Length: 83
Image 1: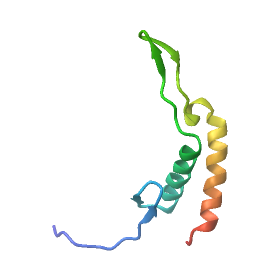
Image 2: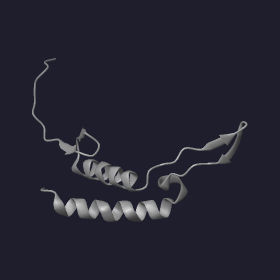
Image 3: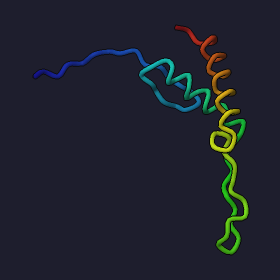
């Protein structure tokens, strides 16, 4: 068994600051980061140990809207990037 060095093409998502092995994963991460920048999650509020406000996260509270925005942003980012 021999260990070798090989060069692979990876994709970088600047909003996430990460490299991804597939182009689609990098585009999805970039779109998700842009959505979270626009609609930041809110923390839940507690008073005397009781939950008075559950917080907000677009991915969990409005899943249909999140998926629609994600698909559209992915399509726009895909058109802007080189293949």
